[in-house]
Image (cartoon, rainbow, N blue to C red; front, side, top):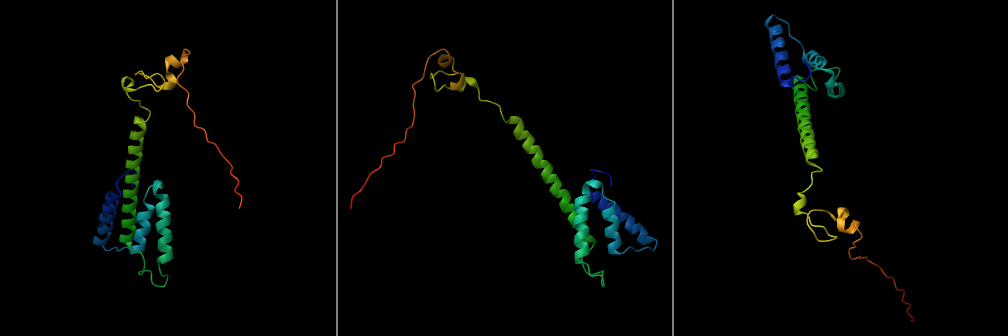
Length: 151
């Protein structure tokens, strides 16, 4: 399978090859089909392949290998992984778009300075305050008073 190719397409191609083998009298076991399919995936699928192989190993009865995960389980997991990757890619794309809009400022003609009251600039860029003009100072102060009670 080529990197970036759809998993469903790869599974369809694999099933066609499997059917061709059946047509000439060669039938592969489910375990062999799973092994071949997982081995044919590109390196970017290494983590999911390892997880699926571990699950198969843990849930397959050695005395009866037909009981446990089957080929359909593997294909479902691979399709779910592809869907998850597409969603993550979409989320990353949306984050990049949102990030490109971050930092754009409002139209300066609509901004009112809280220092001098004029439009067109922020207080920290106020030319009136920078030239010695001052805005009224305000501060919040907290007082603490102790009271002694005699009983």
